[in-house]
Amino acid sequence: MRFIDTPLQGIILIELDVYEDCRGCFLELYHSDRYGIAGLSARFVQDNFAKSVYGALRGLHYQLRHPQGKLVTAMVGTIFDVVVDIRQDSSSFGQWYGVELSAENKRQVYIPPGFAHGYCVLSETASVMYKCTDFYVPGDERGIIWNDPEVNVSWPISAPLLSAKDQMYGTLAQTGPQLSGSAEGA
Image (cartoon, rainbow, N blue to C red; front, side, top):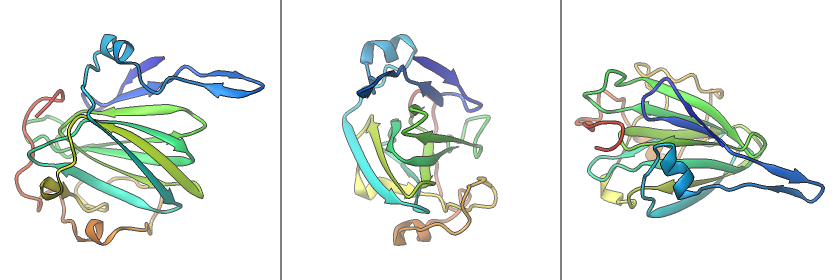
């Protein structure tokens, strides 16, 4: 298992150990002791699962008063996973990082509280699982429009399938108060 730092402080790319033979493969998706040794001692309280079709874009979401850290894994298919730093006091405020996660490359990404998160589906379908460090609070959910020109994410699709809610989000500059705090929490 490898834990790889990314250009945004706190965002960790994880390459899992995979054991394969003629029957298929086995891997650990999460082991609290191993992740803790690597500095990821987050306490996860909720697991989420989403299945989406090609071109679906979910995000960019965050919670204002109940920020969630997330551990994201593509169980089936391929996604382009994106995080945006929304911590006002961060030197990388407004910057984004994207990585391809797939069932084939067996990578995960850890996203601490303080980041907006989203992904688009690059395969026919994709099934995504993510562990969260806080519960989903519907009235606390916020978002940034996927094509915010200031954030300027280089999405690998140009005409995504969006939910009605995701179509209504404004830009990062329009969303109002953002999070403050370190990459470890807000």
